[in-house]
Amino acid sequence: MLSTRLSWPLLLAFPLAAAADAPRVAVDIPPVQSLVATVLGEHGEPALFIRPGASPHGYSLRPSEAKALDDADLVVWVSNDLTPWLEGPIDNLASDARHIELIKAPGTQVLEYRDGATFALGDSDGHGHDHSHGHEHSHDHEHSHDHDHEHEHEHEHEHEHEHEHEHEHDNQHAHDHGHSHEGTNPHAWLSPENARQWLGAIAEQLSELDPDNADDYRANAEQGQQALVELEVRLDQRLAKHHDTRYVVFHDAYQYFEEAFDVPAAGAISLGDASAPSPARIEALQTLVREENIQCVFSEPQFNAQLVESVFGDTAVYTGVLDPLGVGLPLDASLYPALLEQIADEIERCGQTS
Image (cartoon, rainbow, N blue to C red; front, side, top):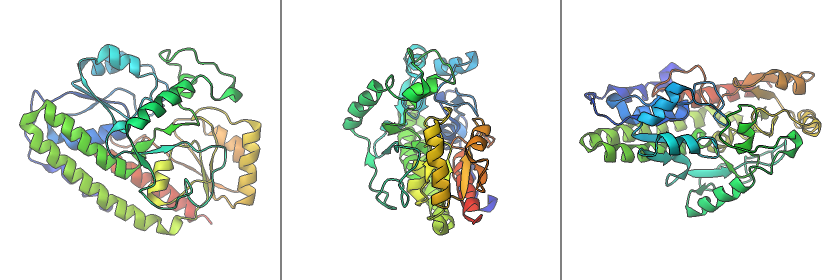
C-alpha cells in the first residue's frame, strides 16, 4: 500500500526553516499528533503526553508527560469524553496555554454511541452513506456534554463499579467512568472529514501564536486537507465491494470510519473498551454470529485478546485486529493516513474470508 500514501509525506518536503521559538504543542493521542505534525511541518514537533498503546480513557501522566503539558503553548486533544481525567492536568499544568478540544471545532461531525451488543445492520445509524446526517458541533453540544457528565456516575451498573473521582487514574476503572455507552462517541478522529476540519483549526491557532510562519501553517493544512480528500476517494474505491461485510468490533470505536465509508459493524463485544461483557451480551453476540452470517470479529492491541476468544472461540469467524490509535505506526505526519489504510486493510481482508 506504500504507493498509495506518497502524497501525504510530500507535505514534509516544504523548504521551511525550523524556528527556535516555534510554538510548543502538546497532544493527547498519536492520530492527533500526526495531524498537528502535518501543520507544523519543519517548524516543530508536537509532544505526546499519553504514551502510545495506552488507553486514553484512563491514564496517569508520567513526569515527562506532565512536563510536556507544563511547557506547552498550545494543547490539542480530542474530547473530555475521551479523556475525562485530563481536565485537572490541563487546568493545573497548562492554564497559560491555548487549548483546542477538537470535537468542538466548527464543522465537526459528532455521532452518538449505539445501544446494545448488536447494531442495526445495513448502516451505522439508519441513514445510509450520507456524510450530511451527522450533526455539526454547536453550542447545543455544550448542554449535551453537561448531560453526559451527569450520567458518568450512573452507567454500567452491570460492572458493579462506582467511580468517585476523575483524577485517580486507574486504567481499568477510570476509563469506564468517562467512556459510557451513551452520549457522544468521542472517536471522531476516524472520520477523514473531521480530520480535514481539524487541520484548519490547528493551523489557525498556530498562526495566531506564530504570525511570522502563519502562511506556512495554512499552506501545510491545505496540503493535508487535499491529501485527505485523495485518501478518502481511494478508500471509498477499495471498500466499495465491502458494504455488506459483516463483522463485530471490540468496542464502539469505529463508527466514524464506518459512517465515512459505509462499512457498518454488526455489534460490539464490550460495553466499554476494557470491560468484560455480561453473559446476556455474550449470548446476544453468539446469536448474532449464527443468524447474521458474521464473517469476522476484531480485537484491539490495547486489550486482552482472550476476551474475544472467550466469546467467539467455538465459532468459525475470522479473528483480526482493529486499532483506533495506530499502535506501532511511526509517530509522525504519516501516521494518520496509515491508520485509516490499516483499518481499511482489515475490513477488506474480512470481506475476502467469505
